[in-house]
Amino acid sequence: MMNDQNRISETNKWVLIGPVYPYKGGISHYTGLMYRALSKVHDTVMISYKMQYPRILFKKEQRDYDNDTFRVEDTQFLINTANPFNILATARRIVKLKPEKVIIQWWHPYFAPCYVLLAGRLKKAGIQVIYICHNVFPHERFPLDKQLTRMALKRGNKYILHAQGEVKELLSIRPDADYRVTVHPTYSAFNFENMDIRTARNKLGIPENEQMMLFFGFVREYKGLRHLINAEAILKDRYNKSTQTLIPKLYIVGDFDGNKDEYLELINKKGIADRVTVIDGYVPDKEVEKYFSAADLVVLPYESATQSGIVQIAYGFRKPVIVTNVGGLPEVVDNGVTGDIIEPFDDNALAGAIYRYFAEGRKEAYTQGIIEREHRFSWDRMAELLSEI
Image 1 (cartoon, one colour):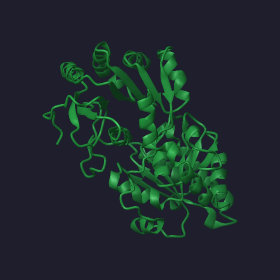
Image 2: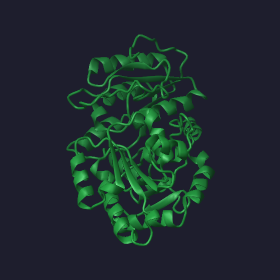
Image 3: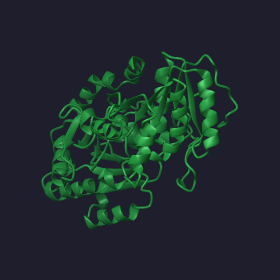
């Protein structure tokens, strides 16, 4: 399946570069959905990686073949990100195609040497290079990340950002950058069965009358899961005496990447083990639906962020959210309409927002707010923006 034998047709006018099925992760899903939107209005070729990360840097399995919903037919798996000869050969193949635009996904400085060579050659050939910046700098900073990012992004002509907060970061390394800011489109492609809440809860063994809130995705320190655990303890201590039914159970679903014990210790210390369900590990695409369909509320208590695909997955299932006022999260949540926005690091405020959501029955109104704003988050709108550029 993953080979580089197919030839790039000379009729294609645009090239899209990034991870795509069978590679795991939100950016892979993003790239696949972007291709679908672009290919409706442009001749577009999809180029992905023959080798994305060396195993010495990323020891977990990078691919998931179980679900091909995000497959892009005729994807060219060409790029070995650690082989300069391969990268230059790929650049020559793209130059021969003479595309109008080459669109590159950017999210980590690891790819800087690869894109310095690739984008540099394309730009030199007069081809417009557009970077989609999922985040300009990585969430977890390290020495030389700014220098590496500058080296790569200065090879671009134009930039798409998904948060206003990223503008300052981009301009710090490219003061003359020509950029556009637009919201992250919605991930609605996980709705494989269009299951209702009752069906989803039957699959998970969750009672229909239980209040359920969901924390989903890779567990990293900056995502603030500790604050949500603390908030659950506050809910139990402060409100449990008056009405048990308004205290939601917390479902933590995602890959802990080795730090699970720290969170389990905190859960036990807070005395809420009976109120928290932990499902550790990578969640295959086909399994995502049941968790979001079963949830009443999705919570993102992040300490820092650029933007988050989790909000867009939630919106794809028409699920309201509570987010913190960091990065681009407030830009995709209409406070009091599609969800609630609170300040980060404030466990009491988080507990209060969760309590009011359930106690005041906000779910129906917020769900309607999401429905009314669906076009704003559509992939067609993203394709229109790229066409305008």
